[in-house]
Image (spheres, rainbow, N blue to C red):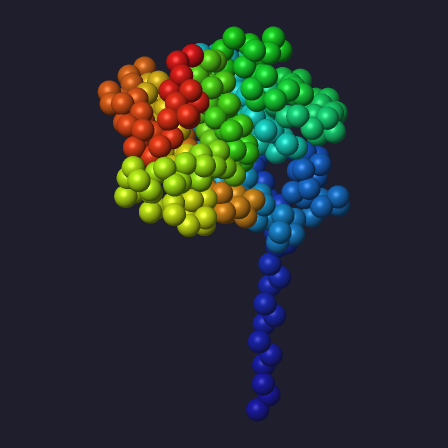
Length: 290
């Protein structure tokens, strides 16, 4: 009996892997410059993961952009410790390049990164992006920035640079603040400095008796103090994880939105914590009025 051969399986249409992950109208040239795509426009496994991480962060920020633009026709965003300005460029490309009233300011102190960002913005025709070579603290008084800023971001701004970004946001009356703190060493250093005195003052000093506990407790405490500070200035604060961003263990995301109503006891609680943990010398940083 003659066997019939099975009909050949029809070939599936070739699927472009970029089409699965890129957003409509997204700049391929930008993704190449940011090393998310290879020079020949390919997407390998590492760059696919990196792009997903960028999108993940943008998911937190996009509603904040929409909130501002639902209230007004203009939007200003200041990105502190911008580095290569990954965040600013992606936000501009995905959400703001067609919004004529929007402007992004990248704040960075490394000359070569500032110049490279300026060159890239010019080459891609992103005219409403500016890059300033100033520290976060200097930016508060800089005449290169407008008197008010709608959204302030500071991702992995080390140690007290995050606190300077908070002061910047308060001074600029920012509606939204997005922080991913990094390397919080100042509070741990003060805990360590007064360790012996604290042993006689409070049993809580056992929490930071050992150096590794001092470091970790100091890091967590720093963010608690920052949240209370923001709440005392009328911000509603949400704290969550930013999973996978730059494969960093510094993975805490703080998002604050100005409501105009301060948490009633936030300042008192903040002051009480500083006193009980023998951190009074930090009152100027966390309690000083603008």
